[in-house]
Image 1 (cartoon, rainbow, N blue to C red):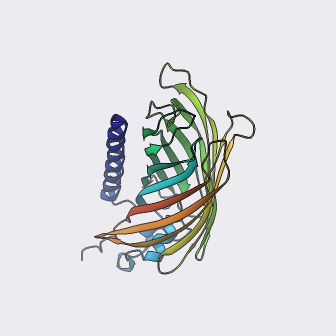
Image 2: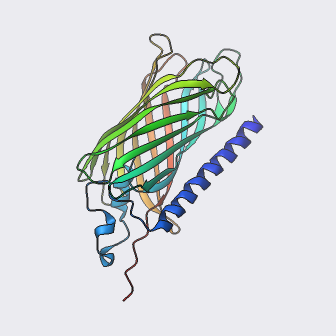
Image 3: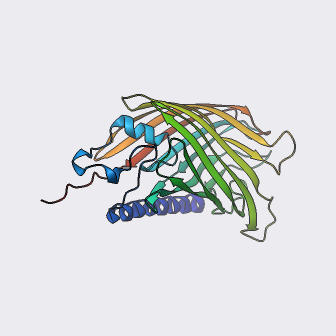
Length: 305
């Protein structure tokens, strides 16, 4: 267990350093990341008109999974009702989002998801409590910088970064991912989806193949104060499971607020989720806390006279 937690801290630190390094590199280029909401790209505005984004602007960008905002979220989850003992699972997700400009018309947005399980109850009678890192999920979205409808498409990769069969899949997997959303006024409505199929094993131990669909519809309403209300689902379908045991469907209501943490904009939020459908041994409800460091691009400097 100690080894799993140690490797989890190392992997999490490596992911954060990677996100910060890519951010520094992208900002050092001086190239535009572009606008994601159909507005004029930032590099076309006069330098004198550039201003730091408001809390409302940042809240709206956070509601867009593929915006031009670099963010480093940490999501803490408590799931109640797991396993035959109806135990409490406590885990964290580190989820850096790194957008990069690849041309005047296109952005490439990388999204990392690193699970770290602090405590997972036994999943079978007589089992033991488990801890460690889960499998890393990496998505890359190619998205146009302009357009009334925001969308992105690309590959998603499942990386077997754990050997614990109760936490990870033990499989290399890949598939397509897509996100589509519309932002109008304070509203953001959209959905993100991906499909993973296993393409190889990470060990000689026989493990179940991966054939899994993820669906995340969401509706968000952002106030001018930087407070956002979000209703979403993070549904998963395991097509390798028996009939009646395939779907995990939570409904999640979240409230978040954009503020500041020293020199950086910062978002914090809390959520409650209720599982309308789970396989046997699945959780019944969840609590969540989010903390995100935001790294908006600095305003361009006025040209020297």
